[in-house]
Structure formats: structure tokens, C-alpha cells
Image (cartoon, rainbow, N blue to C red; front, top):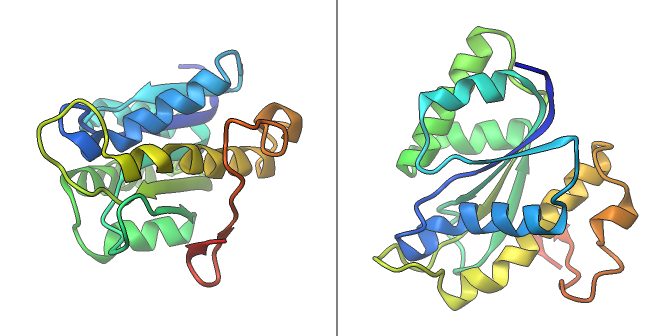
Length: 184
């Protein structure tokens, strides 16, 4: 496998309303940057150990997923590096987070866990049968994409003009304050 610059992984089940938030965010980011040669987009579904090879082969990793943040529905939280590891290891919150932790353990064993890694979590409102996310999660998708774009700019994988952070009127402008853990 050729070394991947940045792997963008969406996790979730799009048949269960907000459970599919990670896949919907992945698709939105990919629609904004379909030709970015340094980005590889993977719909990870509900996870599989076959993803271990992709994680081991990337320099940077961004994961989108519905996550229990103990916050209002639609809250977006970007956890970077050790903060991500702490979140995943603190309590087994969902099957995805358990599976992601297992995939990270495999990468650690092979000394190939990407140093630059982030989990962008979106608080679900409900996880019932349905093909579309609820309104709060739908509104959160552009916020999650903005967080990913900011990371990609910081990591040198996108230039600010490509990210559209300040030029794209389709997306709301938000800032995540990591010190207080909320959007500004």
C-alpha cells in the first residue's frame, strides 16, 4: 500500500438516523474537496479490522463519528491527539469507539499510530430507524466539516483558500474553544 497523507474516516450506520452522522460528515467534506490528492476518504461503516491497514498506512487521521458527548444534540467536539485517546479510553461509549480503540491498539503494536489524529464527534439526538439525521445533527454537519478543514490547514494538507473557511457562504463560521469545550 502507498503511504496515505491523510485518511478521513467516517464511521456510522446511515440506516439509524443520527448514528450515520460520521458518514454524512465524511460525504460533505468529500463533496467540498473531491480532488484533493493528499486526502483519502473511507466510509468505515460500523468498523472492521480491515481498516487497520489504512490507519497504519497514513500520516494523519481524521475520524468523524456520532459520539456521546453528554451535550445537546448537534454539539460538535474535535478531540486531537492525546485528547482523542483519553476520550476513547475513558469509558466504552459505543461499539464504534470500542472498535476504534481496538484499531488504535493494533496500530500502536506495529508502531504506526498516526501522531496527527483527531476524532470529530457529533452528539446524536436519536438512533432509531431512519435514513436521514435529525435537524440538530443535520445543522451540525457543516460545523464538523469546518473542524476537519481547520485541522487539515493546520497540518498542511489544505491551504486556507481551498478550505473555504472564510470564503464559502454556504457554511456557518464557528470556532471551537478547546479551553472551555464549546463553540463560540
